[in-house]
Image (cartoon, rainbow, N blue to C red):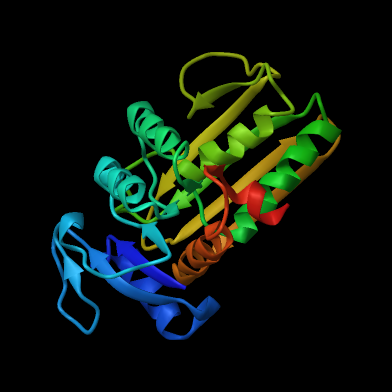
Length: 246
């Protein structure tokens, strides 16, 4: 499977390059795109229009603001697209949805299979304990720009499928009683944490805690390559982790 890697010079680009070099999913990075093109055995361009190589899929680990250029190229080239960046605005999400009408697009706030499983278990817990209080706590390194994380919102949105009246409360301050239908979402920024997401489901008599901890960015790289392999040959449409894990 031949891949064009958007965001090739970044940390996640390097992680994808590494797992591909190790032969994961028989993948090969044939070209990259980055605002700061890197030098190496694989050609890296500053603009999609410069790409000469043929590929089976695009993986985007650049920046959410680059999505129009990435999506336009995917549509023009007729290539499946894995969007692995976070922090998209509603306008940018619409660009992704529009592209999915022409090519298959895989879009997830987190490329971890473990996080996908956490979402599934959190949804089950919320459904099984309908009156429980739910709080989500996410922790990331001190350089992360967006808060709360896209993954925390991904988890909350999964829970909302079984709690349609739920409303999100970001952090807590002041004098206010907690309402049953609230989903509290809290962001912690410290050190060099790759990513920790914890869902706490509590009734007056018991608590269920579901936690996922990422030890290495390589897990997101492997998830993106797995998603790319899943996407190749699919019909146009918008796919996510729930599509992948079944």
